[in-house]
Image (cartoon, rainbow, N blue to C red; front, top):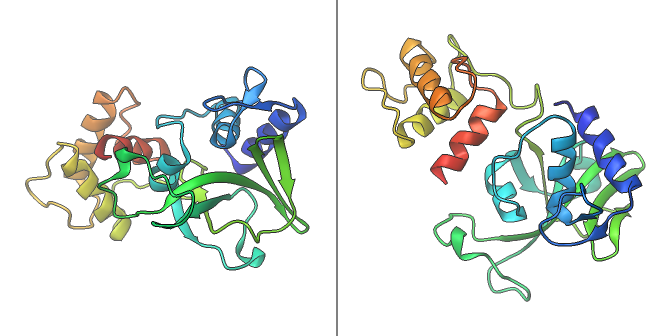
Length: 221
């Protein structure tokens, strides 16, 4: 799935003029904020393996999630989030995230359709709306599943991203007894990754694409 495909399908959902209803993805005339995102992913041929919720998305489906200090930081195709800090009015972090290091309650999400002029689409009480200012959004980042954004990790690669992959594999029950999380993508890492992919019902390519990384995050919570 590319950013262009994703944004095209966000627009298609908007054009259908869905009403707001929790837990819906725009496929039946209703959507909620994260449903606009999930529905566009599904229409683009992608899969959503996680929870239907903004808190799960912010913690598990983002390549990078950073504080938003101005519209100049935004990139086309990014997601933007509104969040309550602990103790703030409206704070209601679901109990499933009680052990999360990130204590914020990410309660609303939108999609950056374009940056000049700025246009952010989001689904709320009145259906799909457009914001032309970034002032009410606090965080921004890119979904991991966009081709070419997080990149493909494969044998021969090295660095912190590989080390994170190796740590995730071991946490998921796929040991690396010879080298552990050494940051070098060798035959041992490739074999463990193939085993994880096969067990998860994915193509056992031995390369870590966005779908594989998202599945690892889901398994490890």
